[in-house]
Image 1 (cartoon, rainbow, N blue to C red):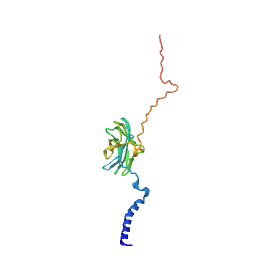
Image 2: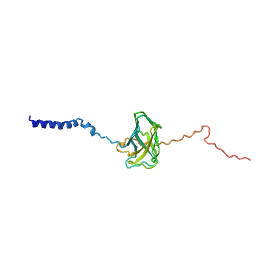
Image 3: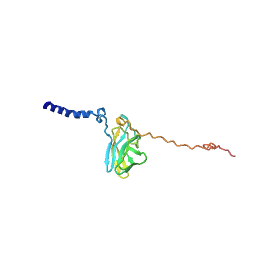
Image 4: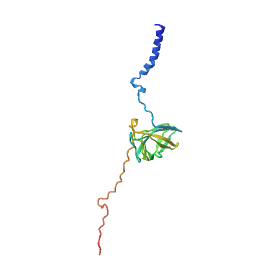
Length: 195
């Protein structure tokens, strides 16, 4: 083998090694899998991290009506521990329901409020809501205080079809008192004539 042939052989091997190494994963290569970007907003303030916060809007081409409800999703962690006491949506909803009243945030642990059922629900929407909008959300913590975010409204489509809208409120009927079987339901009076 000549010097020239050896140089060609080493050059070919140097080019083929990275190509062959890339083929090793075959159809299971991580680069072939779809990894959606997080469309929600993320923020770190003091020792609180709020990650992938978003409001689930209606299906494409639809609108959530005034007075309606919408789900709010997020993942929250507190480096030193804290408690989420309340959430408000000024200018967007009359209130935000927090399942359980407050949410404890253990030290250095992620609290995932991503479902399947929403744990944060905007109630009494003050205006129509469509995908693509943003609304102000304020997370109120016992130690860290308020953290204000401008949160995107994601349409219930694509990657968000598996997220749940809030359950429809059920009307509570008041039970009527049953009268005792031997007592008439309402008193009756008959006119009497006296002389």
